[in-house]
Length: 343
Picture (cartoon, rainbow, N blue to C red):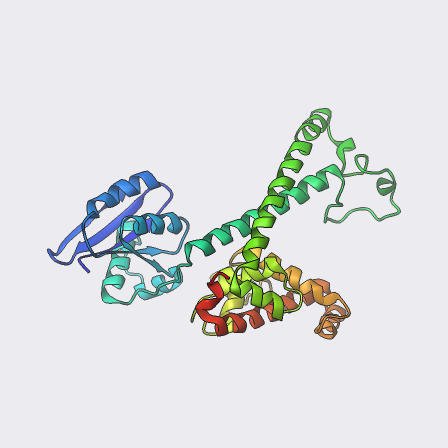
């Protein structure tokens, strides 16, 4: 390849390091500020070059950089951050943006770059829609709790307490205890925001349902797995589908952030908790699917009841969520790339 290089993405600038293999010239510098317009103008220098490849770490901002590289006719190689850092070896010098770019360029030129899978543009749009729906749902729930239509999920007085008999707006956490400016501001902003979030959520919901009906992997998961609806099936397909993406179902569980942490000397967090890494919308969809096994007709209701009696309902739902995720991994692995095809 005539041009091979690496890009280190930051919020304010993009540091580049590329090599012209024909002349042996190495160019280094920065693109500032880091936005589409300036990056597009910088990539114009490679117009007419037939083979251009850049390595980009899979961190915040990689998507628009990969899109601009593809629009300019260059090939984007997405590097896995942890494996890329491991390939650096033992640290001997200070880590800088220039050394990161050079490291990416050397790995790419030597064929040792640990690459990540870049989803098709349609799958990326579905992911964005799922994350938007999840955010709108949380906003709508928060507004409903502020109005008193939905009880908040936090410890409070029991049902016999006077605060519950007083009705919404006069309870201990209602607007009756707020100062006068707070009541005025809450009453002024809540109705419009709640209606707006509900309307947008309704629109996005129909878009997601339509996408789940026309995606092969989502249709198969919804048909074969109990408790998996269109949202959970679409989320698992968008984040887990693809040929040879995972060597085991344990990696899929780790991607979703449902694995249990262990003690490590380099962190202060206690062991025995969920790692919560990965997309929150995927964990939410799996948890909701796991809760459906609390029903008596569910095929795995006996295991759910056993874990609930021994621990609690939340542990039981998380256990079922992991089992659903492992089953979905095997189903999507059988489908391969056909899981991402439209029907």
